[in-house]
Image (cartoon, rainbow, N blue to C red):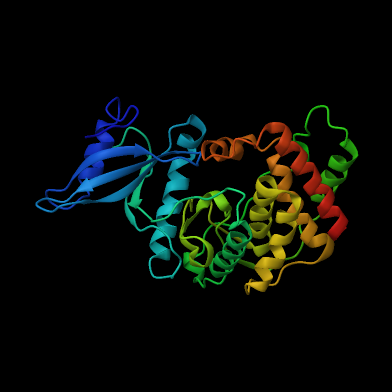
Length: 322
């Protein structure tokens, strides 16, 4: 039985499109929402094989929000190209099944891919430190990918700028924000570019097992894949860890990454630039990422908690790298 919010209300064209890419006789028998993202609507599609018990799953990404729908042709075309590139890379990524980047057939621009095992884990528990080490090792593996010039993704783009930083209202630490904005207003540090996921953080990594058996099962959401400094991916995951688990978790991630064999990172103020460039894009309260995190159980991550952690993280960065 198909049981999914509004699947049967304006999604019939998408369903026919997906089933047109299935093997003869296969059909979608159940649809369920996947949590943890905010840029697109994600659904699990269970597919029944004819004459066989059981089913297999696919994942459907559809851009519904007006902003992302406008940018969907570039985003989905880029993700499709990256998924093809990763098929023989050893990186645990989904395989592309089909893409309708402009929404020419589907009701919304969409991409369908294979379903990966595992789940997102954001809790503060006995596996928190181990997950951080596994995240670091997986990111180092992403950065180690060698791609020809023709296959390189687009050049990296900054997600904030000095004039766009939203300082939290009523903050008693305005001088800290002013200092941080001043750093990203300087010249972009020299760097050696590499292959970036560009949105690598705990919400885009799937885990299986626990304790000694804990393992990365998949890395998802390749729409922002870029060519740029390893520091930027490290910075993005560091900010997310600081918001999830406190400033110390974010501050230590670069050390975990280097210990896992990651690429050489910038030092001192150059590294600080990349860290702040990412962290300031989360201001004022990281609401965009926190909403799906709360859906996944982290109801403790209120705007006040996130603002406090972000400010504490900014101060910790200055204490270490300035």
